[in-house]
Image (cartoon, rainbow over all chains, first blue to last red; front, top):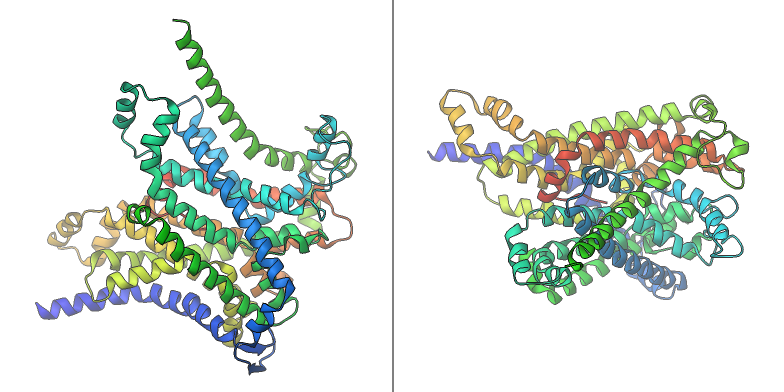
Length: 295
Length: 280
C-alpha cells in the first residue's frame, strides 16, 4: 500500500514535471533575472556587465521621459479599459437575447480579437490614412469636419490607438461576460418580471449581482494586459512620426533595451511596471474584497 | 392597449440596431481590407473610394507571392505554430492529468504557482528571455520561438485542461482499469476522447497566440528567412512608398488561417471560455 502510494506520487510528479520545468525555466526565471538585471549596467547584446545597485532607478526617477511614458500608459489603459468594459457588457447583453442570426453575429463580433495585431494595425492605419483613408473621406463628405484629420499625427494618435485598442479587445470582455450570462437561471428574470421590474431594474438587481464576480476578474485581467500592452501601441506608433506621443511604459522599456541597448534600464522599467501592477492588484483586492470571494 | 406592441417594437428595434452596429464595426474593416487587396494601384488611391473594386485584379496577390518573402514567412509561421501546439498539448495534457488524477505533496501549490504566471505579460519576460536564449546559444532559431510560445501558453492551457479533465468522472477510468486496461490505455481510450473539446479549444488558443505573436519573433529572430508572418509583413512597411494593395493582400492571407481555425472550433469556444479564459 505504502509502496503504491509513493509510486503514485512519483508518476504524478513525473507527469507535471515538464510543464513545471518550462514555466520555472522560461517564465519565472526570466522574471527573477530581470530583477537582477535591473541592478546592472549592461549592454543588450554584449556580455559586459557592471553592478550599479539602484542607480538605474535613480536615473529613471530624474528621467522626464519615464514620467511621460508612465502618464501616457495610464491614459491609454484607463480609457481603453473603461470603454472595453462598457461596450463588452452592453454587447454581451444584446447577444444574450434571442434574435434571428444570433449565432452568426456572435462569430463575426469576435473577429477583431482573433486576428494578429499586425493585421489590426495595418487595417486601421489604412482606414485612418490622412489623404486616402475612408474615415476621413466620410467625415468630410458628411460635413463633420471641413478638412481631413491627421489621425496618426501628434494631436490625434493617442485617440486613434485608444479607439483601435477598444475595437480589438472588447470582444474578450463580451465573450467572458456572455459565457457567464448563459449560466444565469431564467427563473430569476421571470420572477423579476412578475414583480413588474423594468429592464433597467432587472439589470441592476438580477444581472449585475450575478456577473459581479466575473466582472471583477475581467477588469483585473484586462487592466494587467492593457497596462503592459506592447505590440498594438508600438506598431501603431512605428513609422508614424508621432510615435513618441504614445510612448507608453512597455514601449519605453522596449526602446531602452533594443534601441539604446541599455538592458539594465529596460529591466528596471519592467520591474517598475511589475511593482505598479502588484500594488494596484493588492489595492484592488482590498477594495473589492467581497467580489474577490465570489470570483 | 396600444402601448404594449409599440414598446415591444422599440426594444426589438434597439436589439436589432445594436446587433447591426456590432456586426458593422467588426466586419467593415475586413471588408475594406478585402476590397483594397483586389484593387489595382491607381484605384487604391482613388477619391472617392470605391467599395467594390471597379477593376478587380489578382495582381497584389501575385506580387505578394513572387516579389516578397511571403511564402517563406507563411511556411515558417505554419511550422512554428504547429510545433508549438504539439508541444503545448503534450506537456499540458500530461500536467493536467497529473493535477486531476494523482495525489502528491504540493499539488495545489504547483497549481497555484502556474495560475500566478498567467498574468505575466510578454514585455516583462521577453528581454531576460532573450538574454537566456543567447546564453543557451539558440538565438535566431525556430526552436527558441517554439519554447517561448509553449512556456507562455502553458499557464492557461494547463488551467483549461485541468478544468476539462476534472469534469470527466473517475469511475469511467476505474471501470477500464478493472477490465484490465493499463493506466496509459485508459488515458488514451477513455480520458482523451472525452476531453477532446478541451484539447481542441486549448490547441486553438495556442495556435492563435503563436500565429499572431509579434514581440517574441521580433526579438528572437534576426535572419529574414526565419521570420514568421507578423514580423515579415511589418517589414513590408519599410519601403519608401507604402504599397497598400500589397499590404492588404498580405493582411488577408494572414487572417484567413487564423479565422478558419477559429470558425471551425467556434462551438467549443464559449464552453472553453467559461472554464478558463484566454490571454491577450
